[in-house]
Length: 149
Image (cartoon, rainbow, N blue to C red):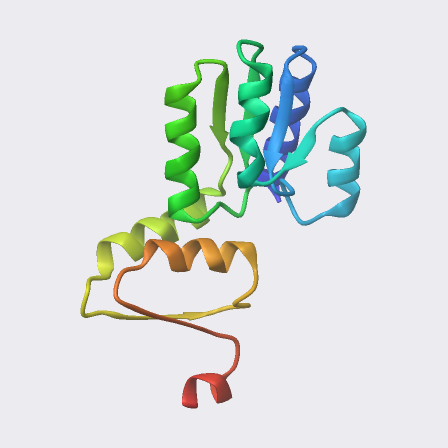
């Protein structure tokens, strides 16, 4: 929870600087905190909207926070490419260090011939992100019965 608290404080502090602050999806899974951020003027957007938003505001500064659960590898690459393209876009990656570590393990320990198994909620944002970093065959499952099948 400490990382989530830090992420929230960073987003609110950035908003007080006067620039547009957005989070790529809800910053955390706590609706009270997300509502609090919204009341502070922090906007939740999805990856499809980032370029249009930045383009429409350029050269006014926009800061985009990556959610604590992280994002899929191709979305992170896309967002970083946009920040290279538009100097007005600042990206702050607030992915939890533990999640980042799993991303690194997935990249390092998988290959084209690997079968990567992840016991998780397959529809959870964190799980989707982790799966995107693994190479080879990937299987996300949430029960023993699923993996047996």
